[in-house]
Image 1 (cartoon, rainbow, N blue to C red):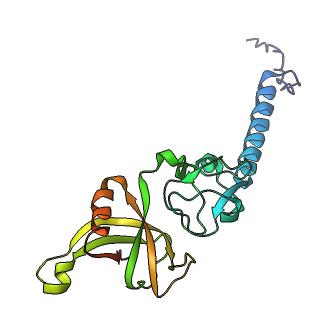
Image 2: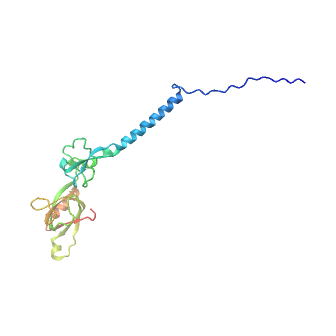
Image 3: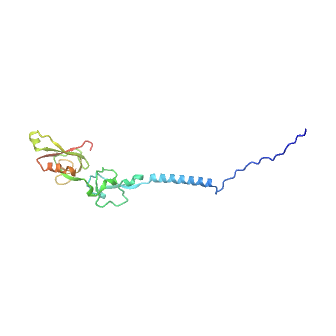
Length: 216
């Protein structure tokens, strides 16, 4: 029995073509790598970018004007929060005043600056009957209490609170010079709604006491 063997052609190995510069897959890969590098570089640069902002040299109180003498400039990294503070690369606002207390060394918030018409407080001088309480000064928080003259004579009338949590604008001596001890006058920022009670007590017989708020 004859057996014949068929000679089949040997299979040809498929050759992988090296992608050319016009291959869409290569172009997409290059674009992704370049985009990642650019994004990473932008993130690092943005994180290291500083902006000049104003910092309170000393405690600033509501109603106080903004001057270069009361401020210092610091370069800080704030990122997206930079617009929330008073930038030093722009001129100071004309006729602007502080609307709230800014502590010494604190960045000045843009929201803390406004016009005098936006203020809801008025500075009222309150004479101290004795030495100023320890630590009392600009920016301190105090309560005002009224003791009628009858309290000093009979001790039967209970003092009453006139206003609470007020900010001290300044502490001055009788001649107007700033000082921290002895008999002084404390200028307190009183909300407009409390003015009648405070001014009425100051003009009547009795004593208006300035009581520091703990931690204030």
